[in-house]
Structure formats: structure tokens, C-alpha cells
Figure 1: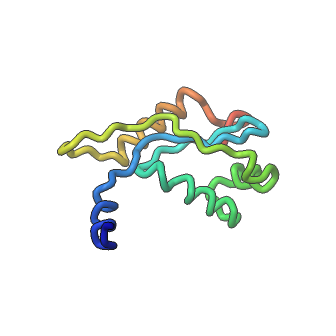
Figure 2: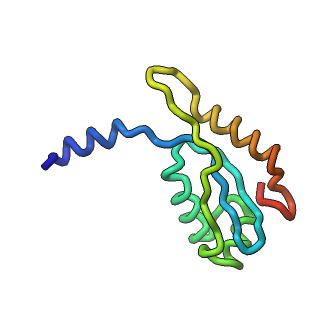
Figure 3: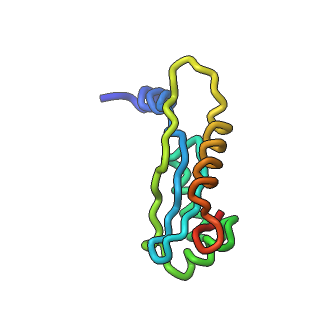
Length: 114
């Protein structure tokens, strides 16, 4: 069995998934699109903010309050593959990719929360 120290070291070498996601309201089909350098943690952050009523997107917060968490789905739209030994600004790359999805899907007004 591995020690606590060994498990911590292994965890530190795990690369987070990077890319673009959407939060989709299944009740009205509106979407919110964003890029992230950690797709595994971002949904938790949004859910916490929404559940505590402090999300920065007022429209999304309003619909979350109205429809409830069970009517929202977290979906990964695109994942950026990380290459070994390559210096890349993943935050910038994920924002650019999100911008492309926003331009394509136009999640504004009746279609979304962006």
C-alpha cells in the first residue's frame, strides 16, 4: 500500500484536463460557454456559486433559482491535448477556443447566458 506522501506526489503529477465546456439549461435550452484550465474542477466552482446564490452571471443565477440544479447539465465541448515538454499558455488557448465556440453557437439572449 502506498504512503500518504507517495499518493500526494502522484497527485501532483496528474495533469488537469483543459478545454471548453457549457452549462446547458435543459428546461429552456439556454447555454453558458466558458474555457478552463481545469475542466474537472470548474463545474464544482460554478455549482457552489450558483447554489449559494452568488454566481457572477445574473441571468444564469436567476434561471438556476427558478429551475433548480437538476435542470442543468455540464458538458465538455472540446478538450485541448497537452503535449510533453511544450511551453504553451493553456489559459490563453482555452479562452481563444471558448471564443470560437461562442462565435459559432451565439449563446446570447434567448439562446444563452454569455
